[in-house]
Image (cartoon, rainbow, N blue to C red):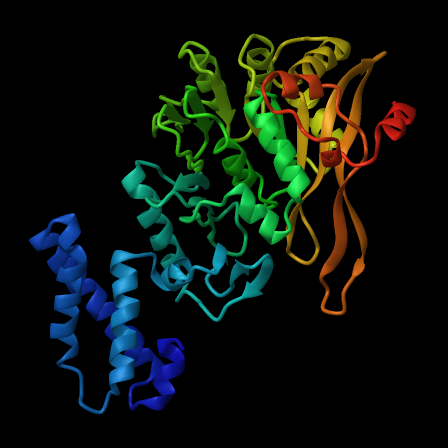
Length: 438
């Protein structure tokens, strides 16, 4: 229940409650600026001042309304206003503000419109400013878009008018505090036990892996899980636009790109960081996402002794992932023939793991595909595991099976040499079937 809906149960009108909220916010904020308490004491200070001021309310205002006023004012001063309660909800994975009156969330893979609203577009702008000002970022008509990261690691994108026609928008991808394991992915049905065993062997054996998928499909989550399998003895350098990876290994160097300052200087791109990482004696390089020319540098790193590197990219199928990789290499500015690019790609990448968000909101690994070399000018792909949909249940759930194709990958000998020999049953089928398919 919001204060506006609660107003009908008191002698206060909606306008009165809004005036009261603004009065409390202005006065408590002023006292906060004057007193300037330690950061750790700010919450206690605000709570105390609100209690003092709310005791002066008329006695006919119910206690539940007082508490609601206190909560919303506290969220506005210390948090992110109306959407703070959504950010605090553990079931919400994403918060989307499409202007002041339309706020959506993603819960368990489903998009839901909430009853949360802002007073006006200025209120949305105040929340955007509160997010980006401590980070030294700016957003205005000359620079109407911004990417940022909350203190807890959540990713934020904001777009303001005139680019955003119907008012300022905010998209917040919440940071998971609980770290998923491979075992949990099996329990959720995202992967099968055989796929889990296979991926574990691939990471330990230092294969170069691309996690491919659409927006919101769970690529970063899967990259996190795969990264957690890297042995403690290796030096890892991670490179991201906004640091999201939660590696637990001890020997990790985390690098994050930097936007240009107000003078347009000081930018540090993902490509700059990939080049720099090569001078840091990494055993593994993990790039949160390849989007442009840094893809060529990543491929060269994979081809020059940095085996076991991991990255993600946006693509809907493994074949699309290769096409997108070729396109991004061309964005590097190097005038390379397409055949040379494909030779680089096929030599560098060992495995593509396709992550998909299905229509029912569930997230699954729908293909694990080997990059099996070149035939003429074409890169050969072989599916090792595949998700096959068999139907849809009455409640809209996708029914299907994650299963091996029966093909044993060409790099299987590398797994065995690294001490990760897998039983035949992991791949399904039998030797005669495999020989026929080869």
